[in-house]
Image (cartoon, rainbow, N blue to C red; front, side, top):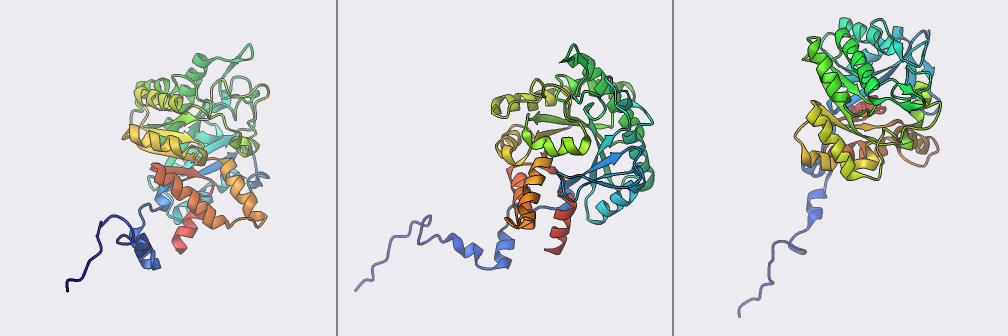
Length: 336
């Protein structure tokens, strides 16, 4: 008597059992598709001009504003964890309407760059935020004329800032002001000054997000009047975000960015599908603060949530991630 055999489709249950590939920790590790590394991470550093000791940031627990004297130690710690890049944010001792200290060759960022470069050489990549908001008395990212942001005067100022950073030794300048034409103006200025090896990381699709609030606390950069919605883009507009990305590419950006990260995984994915340029995602201060608040209240496992969030950002298509959890993430990776 012939034994009947059940039909085998080969592509559905019970022939396919996906749990077979999750049976042990070793098997799960073997199957893991997206892997985080400390070398994916960029650590932000706040440098406060004129300060004598580190200052805690109330809305960002475990993050500090550092005096220049502590910068070398901070970079040593960062390198020791396997992280190969920092992004510098300067907090000047004086602000004015023209953001004059932003492009001062003896400014806090410029001195920080020189110190890192002289101490560490090429061991670490130095990225600098190129914006005016920390330096203007009104707190806006561009120059103000008659209570409006003057785009074209602002990009001239941003170009001067970028050149001063590059001359000091920055590897990558990152314009974050969201002014039209800022990447083109900076690329032309760098090239005209013989600084063509300096790369540009465009803050390409930077949303007008409430998740920046803790950063503004850290950098003392909240606008004195109005808001930033005339230059940062609406978070509802995916097609417009892709236009911003393409605009930066056409103007000469070497790296494009989506900011914030977790609420905009769709934009990171769309950007990955549309370009072969490196993509940076900025996991912003509000993302950090949300995880920290939940952890401090016992509502979530900080390490687990942090790992899931940052892995998701990389899975969506980011090649590198700016995160205030860079050092903590690197420690978790080293212990896993």
